[in-house]
Image 1 (cartoon, rainbow, N blue to C red):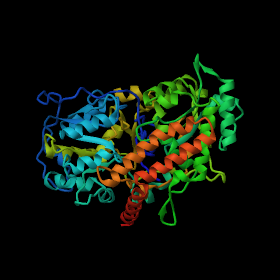
Image 2: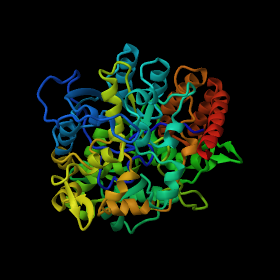
Image 3: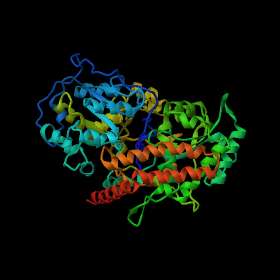
Image 4: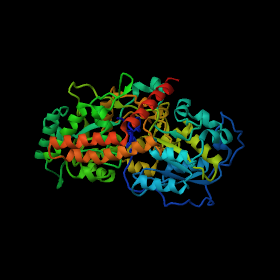
Length: 564
């Protein structure tokens, strides 16, 4: 059964093309830490003076960026459904430059706690901020569309900014076209079939199994690809390194347990085990695969042996980032982009204490992993609210951010400030690149480029300005090369919203989220089997067959869309 969820899920690759340079993630991802980096809710004073270039007369056409028609000051409220987002618009050089250029200021609204609770409240109120950026697979995307809470981007473009169609990829517009013929959201970090043909050999994945370099090498670089070797390595690490700087070692780190499950224990480990997504044209229920069940039992055994710290069942991303920065994990099945900031900090303190990627859990045949490459759905989608204060300025600003010009501005920043033309190539100035590789958080606050603001990033466009990865990020990135696969046909196949199938899907996700910790904490394999069989029975009672029939239909539709 495929139940897609991510961020920073994720995603899967989300920021994989730039994550040696970005901590933002598709956490997923990417993704720097922090609870609430948004400004206080409510708009900034849009009547205050702003540094803008005089507006020039612009004829609206598909060939001319519409934003140039009006660069007077305006502030948009922009909701980001990611509590970890910690940056503010207007603090750094890049966002100041874009505001000066376009006249657009942004007031970010970021949930302080549970994202779903915050967004559900906003949706229920019927009053959304001007822009909304959300994980493409979130149920609220459909709810906002069905509730007429967001505007069709194509109609806005037809009326106010035909340039939107030039700045957008037709394949991605087709992918996100709804049954009513309209497009309500546009993705970031998205790759179409044409992108795969052009850039596919450069793609890297986000999913990695990592170990702390010094510990792993001191243990003799044990093979952790088999259940026996995996358990033995965790045990040896705990015995040899019971504490890290006075704090207990955490033998294994996983993504946080959430309301719908755990990335590490679903698609991530299934990808490492190379479990197929379909067989003979029919979707394959991956979680019933014997190899997968066997590895869940391995993790159950790890818990019984005292090798799964209680922390992993309760920690959220912020707590994990703190512990990663302290080097307290021996191993992690995680997204490399989600700990890029912490990896950089560790590298500066002691290059021997960084995390390196190794061959992790594998199936009994030792097939190579089939990691998620960038998909056409991307990581997030950005929508425009029906309550938007200025329709024309909103679609024009979205078009700008989505265009090559906007992507260059967001990636490189302002020429002469964060980048210059060096050796015939537009690239970061040496001192800027040094800070980027040394201290991502400081870079974000000072320069704000390299997709500090990632809402409409196109990681294919920005490859032309990207600098080669440097250590410690290069090793993590290189390990994934040749292991990526496009999973676009399997994206967005889960029913969402309040449809009968959507309700079934929500119940199944909730059931899985509650079951995973119980499986790992089971006192014996016999108890595991009991919990597992009960879980499978409850799935059937909730309507699994109907849910899977919906998925199969969407999968076949996706294949048709991708072939066009």
